[in-house]
Length: 146
Image (cartoon, rainbow, N blue to C red; front, top):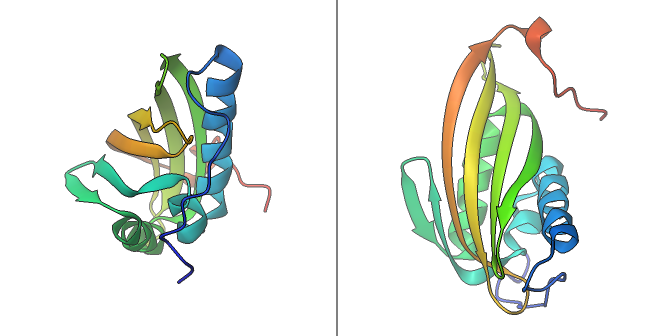
């Protein structure tokens, strides 16, 4: 594992405009679609607080471990995030992603995230609510280019 204690500023910084909030959303989308837990974790403060579905945890090490478990279960993961709203240091996102389990069943997961940022542009809080819907493979909309 890389040095998860580094704190490098991550522009754009709050307070957000419509343009900079959208930049944050699309950067997060690209990082999550990389399926690289360490790359994703570096966008968060070292003590970042998370709620993901029914899991509550904090810190980059916990984020990396969570994402490793997530992507071991959610195969062929593909995500789209959309800006819903923003204020000075907060962004609300609506998202959907598709994945399949080890039995070949496809799912589309829908959700909302609430993000709060530190002055250095790192996310210090992420709260996600997510629902999964089984789909057939021919119902997929978010097909990866990789």
